[in-house]
Length: 361
Image (cartoon, one colour):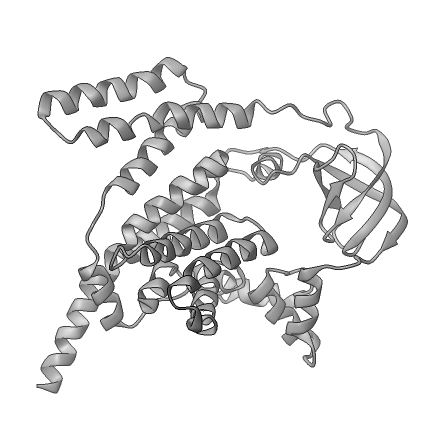
């Protein structure tokens, strides 16, 4: 079961052995409902994102229900089609959030709050987050800074990068250019800082920067290493995703083996905590959601794990939490990459196993 768990969190950076892959994909019974749910939810979000009428979001489940009634199909499909208006509603609510800093572009202000070195969580308005420019001007901890509000750049050319939308999709409310650091205090207790010191102790500068990037997602100190990985086509190894979550889940399974079946809820809680610790990027949310779904399935005695079902459940959970991620390139590539692996790996693994058996015969 533990090997199946690792496979459920796999992505472009890792694959299991051919025998384990074949066993996982063949023994798991295919359950299409999570994929159908993810598809209907995505359709509703897409309709809202394209600024189409809400009547169209209601028309889709109406048509699906008529088709189900006429063809005698399963009524669960008609029920799942109700996720179309739900997705439309979720995106509309997200897009309709008021801008707390509207009209402040160019104004000078003093801000106080807690920062990780890149984002500042403000004391007032409570919970609001802004990105600090230039990066590296302050370190993690409690800070008070002076500066002026900037307007994040939008897409200037077709297909160009829209930094403003990028920040909005990650729950960042504005961009603040720091001109003076009034005060700065290190955090009294920071789990991430403690872990950062723990994984880098005794290492050289480059080794420490690489390790903290691959374990905690801290890439501020990579320097020229970032360009080296990019030129070699290995930049994806620095992005926390299924590889890291799979290794963490396997390690935690061994650590808490003595708890028996109750180790699974403990690991689920720790994986969710890890996601919040390193940041809720699309790849991390997908990997953790898949791992949690697989662990939950094993815990309740559901038998073997079906990877397609966990992928669908992960998409539903992610889009309900962050509907705007549907239009995020990293979200799209993350799910398409895993879907490609799940499509290509089983036939290749079966062929490999057959060749190995013929050679041993």
